[in-house]
Amino acid sequence: MVVKKVLNNNVIIADDNGNEVIVTGKGLGFGKKQGETVDESGAEKFFVLQDKKEQEQYKQLLIEVDEAFIGCMNECMTMLEKRFHVKLYEHIHVALTDHLYYAVHRQKQGLEVRNPFLTETELAYPAEFQAARELLLHVEKCTSTPMPEGEVGFVALHIHSALTSRSLEEVNQHTKLVSTLAGVIEDNLGLTMNAKELDHQRLLRHLHQAIERIQYNDDKEEPESLKKVLKDEYPLCYNLSWKLIKIMQHALKKPVPESEAVYLTLHLQRLARQRNE
Image (tube, rainbow, N blue to C red):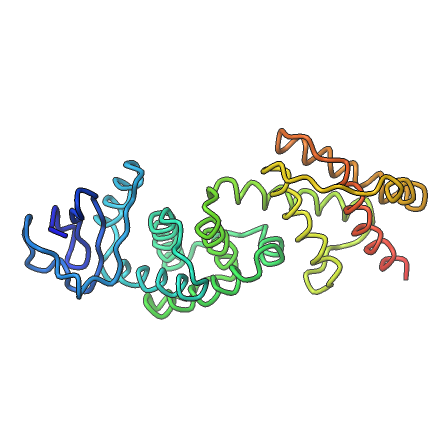
C-alpha cells in the first residue's frame, strides 16, 4: 500500500493495488507524504468505503472530529468484531462515529435525547444491547463523559445494522413498528408490557422476527385445523392478531401470511391468561 493522502496523524488514505482504502493506526500518518509506502505493521485497521458518498462523509468527519476520538472509535470497532467474530458492515464507521461524537457533545452541553424504544430494542436485540452497553463504557472512559441509558438503545441499533448489512433506516422503522404494535396490544388486553416478563419478551421478539420474515418473504406454514381451533377458542386474541397483521401490512406495504395469525394468537393468549390469573 502507498499513501494517497494523509487525513491526520492517525488516519491516511492509501492505494492498495488500485483500491482506495482508509488505514488507521496510532501515528501512522505522522510525517508521511503522498507516494510513500505504508508501514503496515503500524496499521491497526483498514477498510474500504465503496460508497463514494460515505467516503466523503467520513473524510468530513475526520476534519471535525479530534484524533483521540477517532482512535477511541477504532478501538470500539475492534471490540465489536472480536465479540461477534465477524467483519462489520463498514457503514458503521461513518454512522456510529458521527452519532457518538455528537452524542458526547450533547452530554457536555447538558442536552439529552430521549429514547422511546429502549425496551423494544433490548428485547429484540439482547446481544447487541449488551455489546452497546460495554462499548459506551469505553467511550465514557475515552471522553470522561457519562452517557445516558437511552444511548445504549441507539448504539445497539447501529450494531445490529452493521452485523446484518441492513440499513439503519430499516432497523429503526422495524423498531418503531414493534413499539406501535406493543401499544395496540396493551390497549386491547388492558396490560402493560413488562421487559422482565418472559412471555412479554417472547412476544416482542416474535414481532421483530415476523417483520423480518415479511420483509424478506420468508413464509411459515401452519395447520388449517389449528387456525380454526384458535379462532373458536380464543376469539379476542385471534381478532387482535389480525388487527396487528393489518398494521404490519400497511406499514411494510407487503402481504402478511395467514400463518402469522396462529403464532400471534398463541403469544397473545399467554398474556391474556396471565392478566386474568
